[in-house]
Amino acid sequence: MQNDTFFYIPIGKYIAETKTIDGIDHWSFHENLRFTYPGWVCNLVSYFLFSSFGFKGIYIFVILLTMLITIVLFNTLLKSNKSLILSLIWTIISVYFSQGVFAYRNQIYSFLVFILELFALDGLLERGKKRYFWILIFLSIVLVNVHDTLYPIYFIIMLPYLAEIILSKLKIFHLKENYKIKFSNFKNQKYLILLIIICIFTGFLTPLFGTAYTNMLECMSGVSTDFIMELQPVNLLDTDLLLFFVVISIVIIGFTKTKIKLKDLLFVFGFIVFSLMASRNIYFMYLIGTVSVCNIFAEFIRTYSKENFLEELDTKICNSKILIFFIIFFMMVYSIYNFSKKFVRDYVDDLSYPIEATKWIKENIDLDEARIWNGFNYGSYLELNGIKVFVDSRSGMYCEEVNEGVTVLVDWLDVQNGRVNFKEIFDKYEITHCLIFNSDIVNQYIYYDDNYELVYQDDIFSIYEKKNWRL
Image (cartoon, rainbow, N blue to C red; front, top):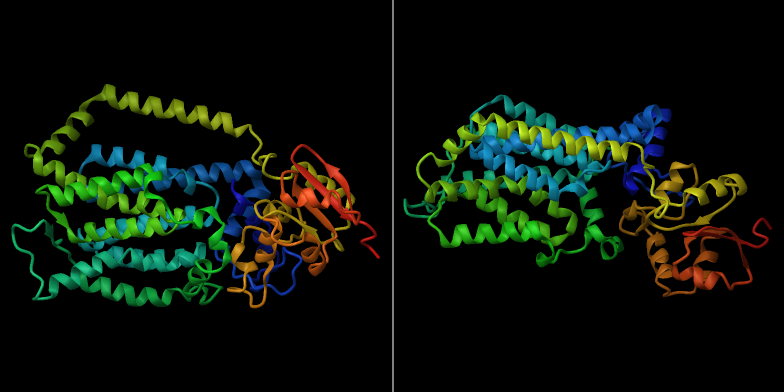
């Protein structure tokens, strides 16, 4: 579970019951905020899973999606570098370091689409299978309905292939036999150009109609990029696997005789730069760029080992029934242990989300009239429980970049960081109640304010009520 998981459910319920996506937010008490429903299919699925099976259903569904991503990544690696053992090792490493993707968010769908896109592009261009052309069009339609914010990434993944095709056609750009960079023997090259042209328009094949072309820019702008952790730039020395990818790529390309395909070179260094821009982008390197890194590593081994070394190693492993049995047994025991341990746990962390405080609010406060100040990370949990919020983790919606003249997120940050007197902001938004962490700065001020009284407190959260707020 993750913050987004909780507000997906009420949004999905609204779509299912009203059969509409009206572009208006209904879950905060601010009026007429524009909200674009970037993953309406994910919202619907989360609602049906939760209403039928509860959080356990969502948990199991995430496990199934994770398994599918892992299988598709392994097969993509295997088709690309032709080594079973390297594909297996690289899959395990990449999936392990990509654990942040495997929560019920839009990203778990979009990364599955991107890996399938990579598999299909190799099938169309490297293996010459024309049926992948139609699969790629279908995947673009899926993406625009499960996570339209990342729709531009669908074209970015095509760019290294397109660049290699264009450069291979230019007479002024010929690679000599002794160059370290080589061209791929792409087939169906005209299909890629046609595919890009068609997919430019598939972004309209959604009830949202057109938001796929603007959402990414809106999300990358605004004050939310200054404080949300996953939008912060990456320090290369703090990311072990990314640093390893950078080092191994530079060493092999710069200091060995290994020949590298141009599209792999563009993929690796393109996604390295992309990863350094924001921490959440790092998963593009781990789950997509890893295919090209593995290709480079495989070429290095083939260059400096005896002929057919990797193929012989794969054959020995496949013929080793004891080794295969051990791997399967270990994975099954480890998986069952983790599944059984987490299957009986509470799916909402009471240290991060106000479980008991929420129950108190629903039993003691008139939700039709109250305007509750709340924290950024647990606003979605309140929405799940039918409580309208001041702010939640749909950060862009509360900024001027999306809703003109709206400064909700800026005002929330100013209060949280003690930059303004909380009473000014509370008066501006006519706040009647305040649900906060006991450790919040505002708690130190409001506790001594005569206009507010403490009406609920537990070890983590406090609730304050404005005196005579109904008058």
